[in-house]
Image 1 (cartoon, rainbow, N blue to C red):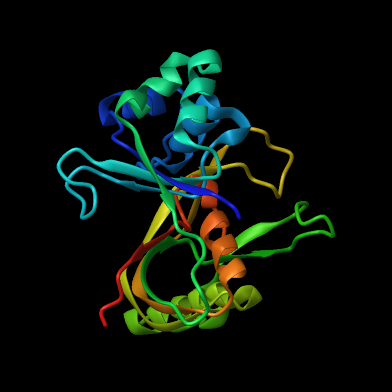
Image 2 (cartoon, rainbow, N blue to C red; image 1 turned 180 degrees about the vertical axis):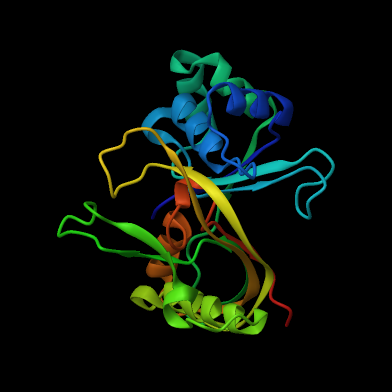
Length: 249
């Protein structure tokens, strides 16, 4: 049986922002996903947790100081030992590892289990990809492809909700019974452009959407896999982490 750890960090946002500016990891608009990707990679190497979700200070779920949640197959003690031995302290310091906490997540949810969920997603599809899925590939907002010409808030929410339902339904993992978009925005992320030979990261615009809802587990192993890998693309940059809560009834 796979073990999945839920990690909770209390990041030092001042240090994180200084690092992001100094290392040019912050795009216009200030999304910290790429900076945290770099921090995790430098701190934990191949064991870098993903997916993760950042809650800024004052944001619902973040409290007054902010919080960073992540799923990991490796326990916190193993990650901190790796950081102590190998991490660049300038990158590890913003995580304040001495204050990090963890718990073991349940992963054996029997078919028929009802769960509440919350997830931040970037509903995009790749277009122009070659056989290996990289050359010429670009990210396209699924709303622009599925509902060109519609501009209503409700139309966007419906297209994204349908996309999210399909993601949960892969491998018959879970069936979404209801969902609600709690935010519909756009952000610019730092990412590597796979459509060119450029090695330096560039700012990429795209949808940034949060949903809450309720689902029913249909296949226990498939649902455990979904929790572990996350939903959609950009999972290493702060999207796709499925947070669970009790169902309403």
